[in-house]
Image (cartoon, rainbow, N blue to C red; front, side):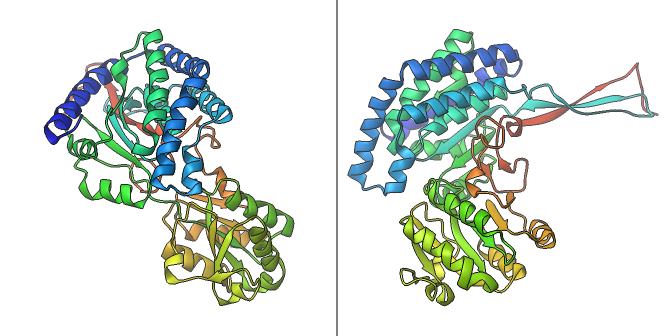
Length: 422
């Protein structure tokens, strides 16, 4: 379907159907929503060969477009990853339903009894790039929180997302819930994104999940409220007191486990006192793992394989087998660097000095701050949320991994025995 008029009509239709479905979902029993998620999980596994075949079409498209190795990794689905998506759906189903939860409750001298309770946001628009698993994660989390969702995946994952979406629809059908609860934009036309950003009459919040270009576009042009999900410019500071074994394990894992995810370390900061010892070993280990290290003059002196860093390397999300590295004088210098270049996503300190850890935690305001832990844990599933719709880096409403609970608002329920105001 092409042309602005067709896309406008298409998106208006999706919005109207989502609005109607959201009204039904708001009061759907937890058991019915969970049944839909479990049936969708079963469908994913039974249709895994179909999903992998669809993914092969996307991989061919990605190769034709010249996607990087890291981006191709994000796009790839195999049985192991499909099992992970299936397990994520089941984990979300097993969680407590957030809708109707009493957040706070109190009595007033004026005779009022007041409860603040969780309620769905309504209709959520999710705009994302190449990772097809977001289709399942976002659809499932929105459903769990009683929201309808309109999914607009990237052109690279078009076929994979379609195959996964079909499994979510099967789950909704088997549970007796409206299929319009989880809709997918069935076109690659970018005009659909513009229509979503303007659809204030249908969509209650937009969640962008992708690179700086996508998020910047959404934040600039959206008339619908937006959950800010900026890029992951993730720093690790290795303090003078760092335990060498912990530091080696954490730094190597944080960079090399998967280089193409938003929790991958992108900048290594090394305390000057350990640069010639532990710092040298860390750089050598990264180089040995095939990581290109771009360093300042002090880091270049540690290993001949290090290439010079430019100003553009600080504050850059590589999503690839590349890391920036710098020697700093102390924890305050590390904090100053991070404040200047961080995207407020995830930052980590490796240290055995409690005062420095406290200083790092109190003086930085990233959505996730870590101590002696791989930044690859910056993930809703690892936080016990089953999955995530993304990592919110803003300060309004939701922050950090956005799970089902963060996809709710609240309302006040006020009762009395006929109280009147004088």
